[in-house]
Amino acid sequence: MGIFRYALIGGVCTVADLSLFLFLTKWLQLHYLAAGTVSFSLAVVLNYYLCINFLFTSGIRFTKSIELVSFFAISLTGLLIHHLFLYLSVERFDFDLLISKVIATAGVFFWNYLSRKLFVFKTT
Image 1 (cartoon, rainbow, N blue to C red):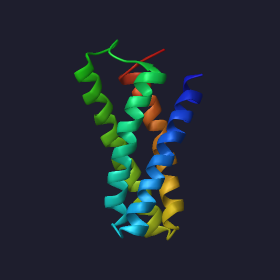
Image 2 (tube, rainbow, N blue to C red):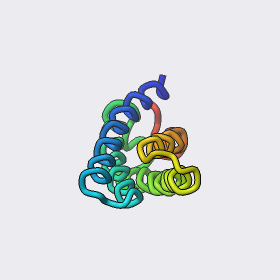
Image 3 (tube, rainbow, N blue to C red):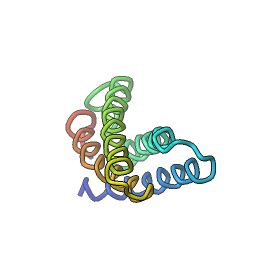
Image 4 (cartoon, rainbow, N blue to C red):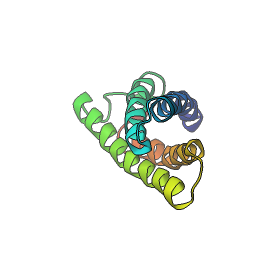
């Protein structure tokens, strides 16, 4: 059940991430990796809020401060994975920017869920 709720939360965060990414790259002409960093970061903050309110029990396994640092450390690793997928999709395989962003987002999905479930939160 947790993976399905996480997928729903992830869907909300993905819409926010993709929307901001497209705005930053298409309208503001920001480089795709910089835009990816900004949009991914916003999605991580939103994801944390939704996870602690609708999926995981916050503050059980660790203190809030350790939980927050752990969550964002995992997210930083996720950002590196995201950028690797994004870069390779755009530069190596010449995929469309939006397709590349979707591939990168999907590539990080399971890393984030499993890492947060196993190392940060206690599942409700």
